[in-house]
Length: 164
Image 1 (spheres, rainbow, N blue to C red):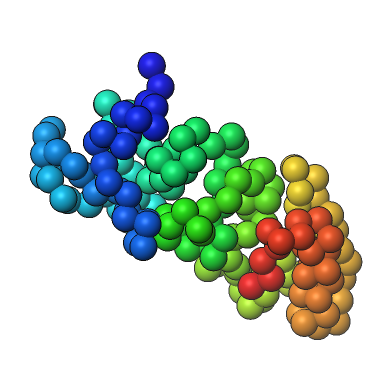
Image 2 (cartoon, one colour):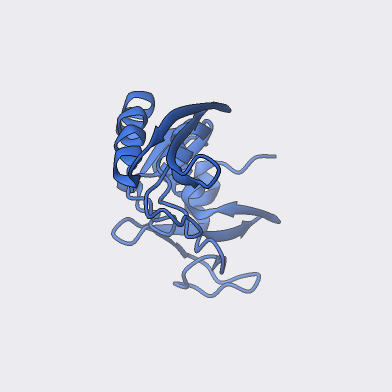
C-alpha cells in the first residue's frame, strides 16, 4: 500500500522555509519536533523511513504539498540536493535532471562537458540527452569547447541547462 498525503500530514509538519519534515508524534525512535530522517554522507540528500519504506525527503515534500506522488524525477532547481524547499523542486525527465547537475569534481578541464584529447591534442566538447551522445567538435581552447557545450545545452534542455 502506497503512502498517502493524508497519512504523511498526520506524521509530519512541513517546514517550508527550510524544506524539512518535522515529526508530529514521537514513536519508533522519533521524538516530537525532531527533524525527520537522516542525511546520506555522500549525496547530502535526506532519507526518511515511513511505514518501513525509505523515501527521499524531496519526494515526500512533493507529496505533502501537492497531494500526489511525483511522476518521474524531481530536479532541485538550484542544484543543491539538500535544499528540499518546495519552491526549489520541479518535475523533470531523467535527462533534464542530469542536465542540471554541477560540473563533476573529477573534471580536469574546469568546464562542464569539456575534456582534453591527448591523441588529437585538442579540447573536445560533448553532451548527452535521453541516452544519445552528441559530439560537439574539437577546439583549440577549453573556452571555445565550453561555449559549444553551453549553446547545445541550452538548445537541448532550455531552463534545465546548467553551464557550470
